[in-house]
Length: 356
Image (cartoon, rainbow, N blue to C red; front, side, top):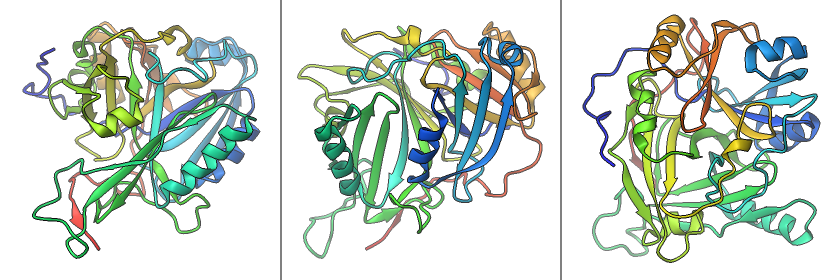
């Protein structure tokens, strides 16, 4: 599964990292209450008619949108709740891990075991279906050198996933290092969690070549050639609940303008439930993500040249010039024009700093 996106010269689109996760629902009050405990606060709300929603999203339903932000982070990792008066369907919902079409949003925490206990308790009482995986630690970045003991302490990241009917999470906690600008946790946040730092997509595709437009049309950088992760890697094995002998293709993309808002794509190498038909805009669950750029017309032309059939440029519900498109792997995007720089300046250099 070779790729040519690593060596190609990328267009200078000014593209952001992923700006928003968009969650479809018919109960915004619950979603707002739920995400408030993760530090997300409402910053904007707009309602549009079914006629307007049809023009923007091709969904014939009245829509109320709520934009939420975690702390002061306004350059990536926001949440938009799409409350549809008449959702097109229930979405993917509670499904087997690595169901094709699934989307997962990732955030940093200061207390991963507390979160695990909360979701495990919720699972035990059975009021809402949640599947938390037990946290597991690994040296993902090769930061450990020399013999480790009490004084030469391990440098690790511990992570777990929580799969639900309503939303899919991955949480991670760092031990012994920090990455400035990557996951900011406000001290008053109830669950000690950050903005969304990156995003996982289990896609309906036969090859990662289907995602190459992220580089050639949007200007994102492919972090590596497509690689295979499998059950021999303890992190992916635990987080994705891999059975013996299972693996998937993996490739990541990141904006040259922000180390956060990364994208990670997975293609299972084996038989998995395929519910990608219920991943369309207008259904419940995570169905859409957004980027922003100061060069909207340029990006629209590039996407059109890739025959991805974007909508026309028009105002979205927040009066932002934007367009929407869905790629051949079933991933949907809204590209938003933003001329003014965010207040929270994005970090563009990935640096690891060790700590006690």
